[in-house]
Image 1 (tube, rainbow, N blue to C red):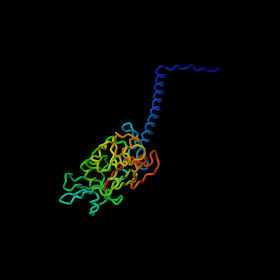
Image 2: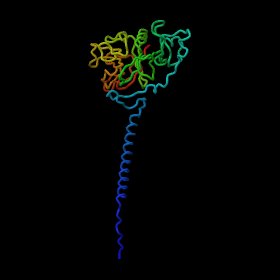
Image 3: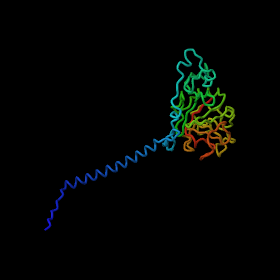
Image 4: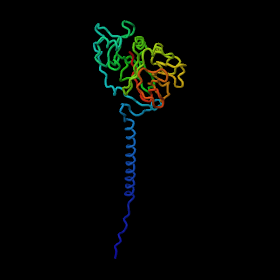
Length: 289
């Protein structure tokens, strides 16, 4: 004879506790999946390529690269302590320091661009190595920068342009030209002859680097073109553009050489816009000498 065990009745409390346990287990599993997906997204944003440029960030509705040029070049050394003080002669530019044998290498110095004029001595970042050295940094700009801001001291760790009085004094003393260095250390050069002879915008008419040039919607500090319309592909431009210029995915820091050729041009003739730097760089240091 088989013994048949009677069925045990499960109480309400036991079945309810099982339900709670199952619900909590499902919730924990969903939470783990969610956290793993968020972590993956964060890691994608934080990942950087070999140039030191992080992935993308949305600024003002634009999808842009975010650069850290200071990480590429490293911290700048300061050589301005006791320089241009205590009765010492204050040099007018980075090149003046170099010519007088007072350079201690690339870094920060104090210069007095107009001697005993109205512009007080100020700190300047000097490149004493590239293309013979003696280059004074007057602007540091990158794509997706909403505003072009005037500052008293332009260096690797901030974005901005020199104030109008300092810029004009530097501009009036230019002897060699302008040099542009990107976050991949590529160098572009434009001679003083081309800077001054441009038919649309030459540097002598640029009074304020933070404002759009007269007749322009963006900050153009040099423009050569037959009809000066900025249309088609027959223009050459140096731009320090802000949010008013949203073309080319908000290419605020950019160089174009469709017409007048730069004296040195490191970028390949490839990309969406051949003969433009914007597909190959996102950040520029603007030097004058």
